[in-house]
Image (cartoon, rainbow over all chains, first blue to last red; front, side):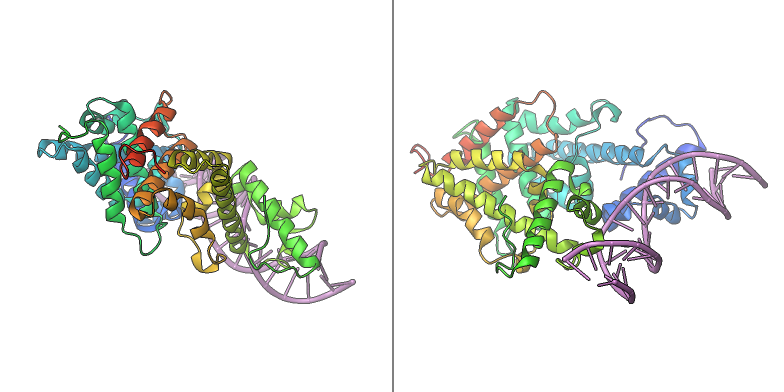
Amino acid sequence: MSTSSATGGVEGGIEDRRDQIITVAGRLLEEQGPDGVTMRAIAAELDIRAPSLYKHIADKRELEVALIADAFRQQAEAFEEAAQAGEDTIEAFAARYRVWALEHPHLYRLMTDRPLPRSELPEGVEARAARPLVEAFAGSIDHARAAWAFAHGMVTLEIAERFPPDADIDAAWRVGFAAIASSTKPAIPNR
Amino acid sequence: MSTSSATGGVEGGIEDRRDQIITVAGRLLEEQGPDGVTMRAIAAELDIRAPSLYKHIADKRELEVALIADAFRQQAEAFEEAAQAGEDTIEAFAARYRVWALEHPHLYRLMTDRPLPRSELPEGVEARAARPLVEAFAGSIDHARAAWAFAHGMVTLEIAERFPPDADIDAAWRVGFAAIASSTKPAIPNR
DNA sequence: GTCTATATTGTGATAGAC
DNA sequence: GTCTATCACAATATAGAC
């Protein structure tokens, strides 16, 4: 996990501690879910007491913002990696999106189920993660958004275990993305 | 809201109180969000003390299950109402789905963001709510599921206020559903 | 930069009297 | 069926010593 701080600068010893705190918070989030991320638990992992954390971060919200910023960077890297490997089709991005989300289900929820703290996020992180998909749709923002909503719905229902036990999730992905991917450029491979 | 109890029977005075409790819980959920639904708050609305609630329900989970069962009934009614009015197209169901979800955002989340307590739900409620959409897709369960995922993704991102402020949400609905609705029967009106 | 002590606030749930 | 009293637990955060 890349845990570079939201503020970005390198200011010495306290910055290291801050990074440790964020890293531990992220690990607790994925291993134990949101309820596992308490100030006490974070502190315990670092062998200090909870009040000491407040010398490094203002409050718990600051931690969440840092985790969300990090999540966007990870998503962007996954997409950019795919593009560099020549896998810049809509289907390839969908596959990456699904894999990343299922590998980080709690982080995925943290970054999607509430309004984004956009003013506190580093400039451009959201746009960077979105760019490859928009480009794959030749700049059609509405199609890109529809594709995103479909992927988000699928991933969300899969994470929440809300599909019926016998559902063929792969099949739903296939027909859904086939429909949306082909809607911009009907009979031509999408690039 | 139809608050008939999950057990179904009419057993006299205590059943009425149970229904009142569920009704109040549902109202608090929508008015104040999930954190507003505390046993103390429910009791206060009914002018009794929190411990008295436990003479009518076993625990808080039983309340949630009852609310979810009720939510399915409401959705089913919305779809069946549309079908009876001759609005049995995929687009019409999508519109109903969206409206219902946006009118009951917290209830919608309660019923979608965790695994369904299927064994505790009255038989058939889930299938009844799903049937109209599956029929509109001529029985193609994969297409119905893809359509559901798209609608769920849209509604969820809308409720969470996760779209960028300038996003044209209606446009995304249009292109997304046009793609999915036309993927089964390309050039023919979908019924 | 870490500590102890503590404020403050909250939750779901039970025991037992009436 | 309602009450009072209370348990058992947990959370974020601050004050002030060292």
